Image (tube, rainbow, N blue to C red):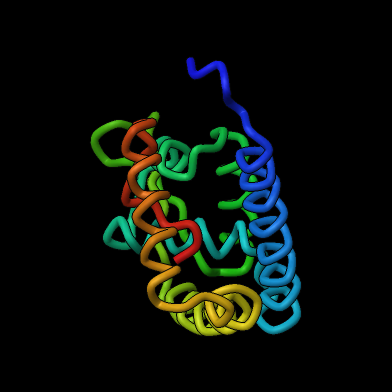
Length: 157
């Protein structure tokens, strides 16, 4: 480990990223609930199932979203209650539960994505030049790769 780390710049970077993600996520969540009756976490799960060809095993969702099975179950319960997802036991292994995005779920996700992108654009992307955005994305992608963070997840879609 580098004994000169963390530097003051390291600390500012970490805290700045944490504050920024928290702030933008809170703003997006608020708008998603107001406009679509959908929390950001619910939208993220819907997006993940959609990214997995419209169906996924509950255990795979927990892995891709990097959260507990209990958290996934709670989100699926809420989305199923709204008719946005359907749950079904696997035909080959009854211990496995699969979830499917419904047509209303796909439409709600499409609309929610527009709102999410509007909020993120207003609060974040519009404040970066294309070069700055590319530089930040490159650095974060490299660090994710170095750490072996699951790629291909949708956070949010």
